[in-house]
Image 1 (cartoon, one colour):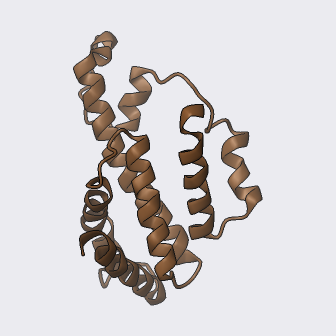
Image 2 (cartoon, rainbow, N blue to C red; image 1 turned 60 degrees about the vertical axis):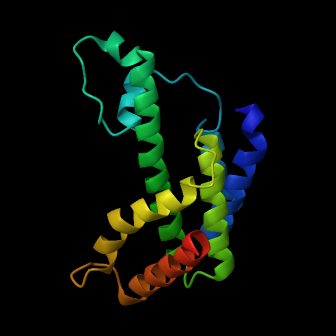
Length: 167
């Protein structure tokens, strides 16, 4: 964790700024120990990756290198998409997001890509496309429970992110 401290600190700053969170709110992660080194077991990795990997009656099969790599890739894709949804939702909930907010979202995705081992510049555009097709339609549908102002905020941010990530 310490070797990634600068990236983690910058990521937390981006989250705080985008969601307009207080310093007290942001301290909760540290207080709960989420930002400390900890052991990652195969069963926890299975849960983190959405249980896409079959649960074997022999738990040691989950510890095979190819299975661990698969769960890490799936987990990173899944968690990065959830992260983007949470970050965008936090920002939209605070009111109209600005161009600077969209730039912060892109920077946060780039940092997350590096931290997840997917450090190339294709991570952010890919996560945006996954988010745009997984989460955005449910928010923008006419029968969505999202208020019209929220829909407008999500739509505008999606357009800004598309401009930044896909030219």
